Amino acid sequence: MRVLITGAAGMLGRRAAEEYASRGAETYPLTRKELDVTDHSAIEKAFADIRPHLVVNCAAYTNVDGAETEKEAALAVNGLAPRLLALACRRHDAALVHVSTDYVFNGRSPRPYLISDPPDPVNVYGASKLMGEQGVREAGCRYYIVRTSWLFGPDGKNFADTILKLAGERDTLKVVDDQRGSPTYTPDLARGIAGLAGTGIYGTYHFTNSGVTTWCGFAKKILRAAGLKTKVEPCTTAEFPRPARRPANSALDPFPINRVLGCAPPSWEAAVEHYIKNHYQAQTED
Image 1 (cartoon, rainbow, N blue to C red):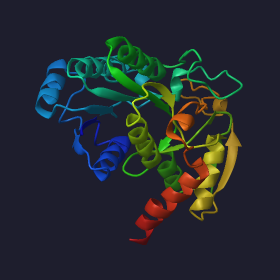
Image 2 (cartoon, rainbow, N blue to C red; image 1 turned 135 degrees about the horizontal axis):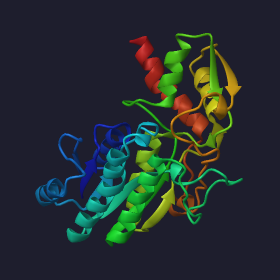
Image 3 (tube, rainbow, N blue to C red; image 1 turned 90 degrees about the vertical axis):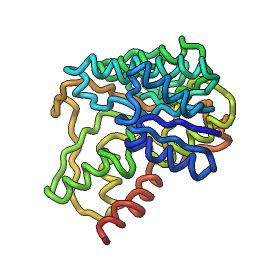
């Protein structure tokens, strides 16, 4: 099987490339410099050269605050590009995995969001990702839309690394405690994507590590796993205003992906421990 991976220099793209290579697939990881996913002609050339059976779209504009002032850039990468990729997949009879986000929801639900709940993004980033989902569905290809959240892992800027860096500079950290969601470890997500894409059960899914926490709870677990004594004080979103609004609750209900895959992803706590042990501590020991 030939697998084309876009955004292959990113945190998830690297893990997806590793996962598919480990499964024996002919893997073609293309970085942003190698494939501009907003360029229709470039996409057509890549499809003609590679003739992929599956495309995993990890390319994304991920600066949530930056999207408020760089709206067109966010819409081009998150909104237009998935449509172009999906149309190419239809023309070339390839399936598409498109990675989306919890931020398509408004955050006012008292429970985790189901795949059937209506999206209602509260910021430009979420709106751009919703536009991408709509483009994939309208294109008529075989697709898996995988919404995920709070990504962390090796080879990319993420919350875990930020907390560990700040802990080396300060005795106390203030972290938001009124936003709820599920941290997701990129190697676990890559495995989930590969497993799902092998089922042929197309549609929209939610995939995160199991369990729900707040950014404050996430930070505390990161520091405990790293054996650091830095104090974490909870604060409200209002105390740290950002250019883009954040949903108060963006937890995603995993149904039906657990049924489709036959198992639940590891807990987010176990994922944090794995990341600290295999990446952070390994780096500090070098």
